[in-house]
Image 1 (cartoon, rainbow over the protein chains, first blue to last red):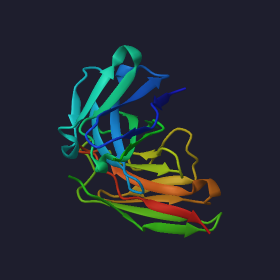
Image 2: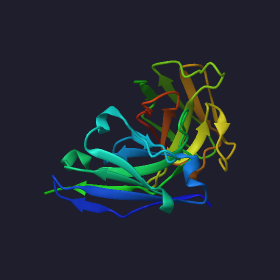
Image 3: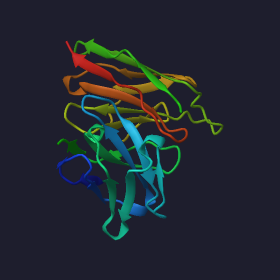
Image 4: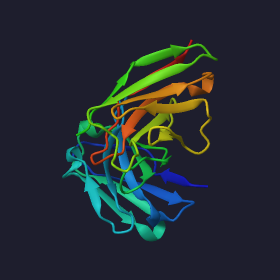
Length: 119
Length: 112
């Protein structure tokens, strides 16, 4: 069955970096894009961008340009999200979600990774 | 960016009754190919979102037919007939027409 399994929760200090992973199984990894979605505590869903799993090209939403990097370990069917220079407002749950490259909907989601940024 | 506006903020429903959730987009989501690119998701308490409906009215695999989606170019409705206790959570609409993708702010469904 199709699964997206994400890495575990993270507790970081402001200014540090974090890298979270999303391992896909049950389908051909390069046939679908991987999207990233942020959910701050008690808030709604915010789309961060996506990575083309065939070419490796990332696309970022405006609010996520600069400190956020999407990457792949295609041989391991894994997508990664790295956030540098962490700020308190980065405290959130981050979901990976499988989707198409265009006219996207998200048919499978990871379980989410809670990242807490606190001094 | 396309703004997705949901109403109501919350809805309380007796099991067995129906519930409707509205979503409005700031731009037509009707593509020239005839598809309307609005999707619906349900986030149950403490869980990741799950996929319900795509292209306005198409049920995702495994979704009970108590769920249905309808609408026009900018106004959309998710209807849940015969609500069950397992349907509690926050419902989000989202568009897939163009980047950036955006979601509505969510509608919380509670059971009376």
